[in-house]
Image (cartoon, rainbow, N blue to C red; front, side):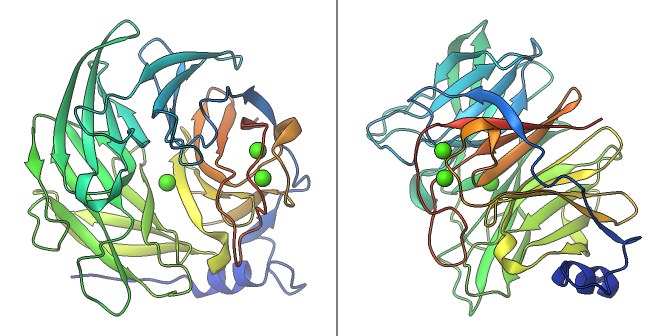
Length: 349
Ligand SMILES: [Ca+2]
Ligand SMILES: [Ca+2]
Ligand SMILES: [Ca+2]
């Protein structure tokens, strides 16, 4: 059975961040809302950085889907702890004509990298890259026929978010989470609700922003969390022993224009959220308190300014944030895609 427990007080508080009646014990606003610094300036082959994973050697791996320039390839960059950038690998196209669009990425305990190749619902797929040092020695397809966005690896399983399901005829936008075994190969998905690997789906109420489940993360206890971008909601999901989602609990509801994208935990189970729409970063504490950590005006990303944050990761004592800086339009604070291409950080301690 699906349970939904909206925290009415929290919803009211976040919706009214500027209201004097806000109870500061439940929702806080950090005193310095422009705390971000430049972690790395990215090369010309990474104009739209997306997701992060910590590599076996302790460096950060960054995915570059490069939607801003289709003449580029899909790239993976390596960032050292002090922000030095080097090229890790070009994501193989495996016979397809168009470049790969690597988005969500995660390493397993053996050092293989799973990549969400977001090339549309027909040709999109999950790849497994096996490395020898910095060289890709094998690329395999776990599954295709889905358009992955967020991706996590947990206990031998790969979990991905499916932002939209255009084949599902419903009044509202349908989106989903799929789960694959790391040992799966060449599975063909239909991108409909009949796929056996689909473990959860939902509908996005806000039809002004037709994107659904995007961010995905596990806490220390192995509980699964996800964020609906169009509704700017964060859920905790419960799964049965077969991995099917049996319940969802609403933990936070932000204004729709926040557009929560990537989410990531720290070691104390604080959940950080990338506010893609309005250049904001939020923190949700385990006891349900939401703090706005960053709030940036429209900018070009220089000096570490948050410029359309897509995803984030806790890396040592830093919260590292990718600046996607591409989408614009109604309700989106970003007005222009431009250099510099950057990764920002916020000091956590
Ligand atoms: Ca995302
Ligand atoms: Ca910008
Ligand atoms: Ca920029």
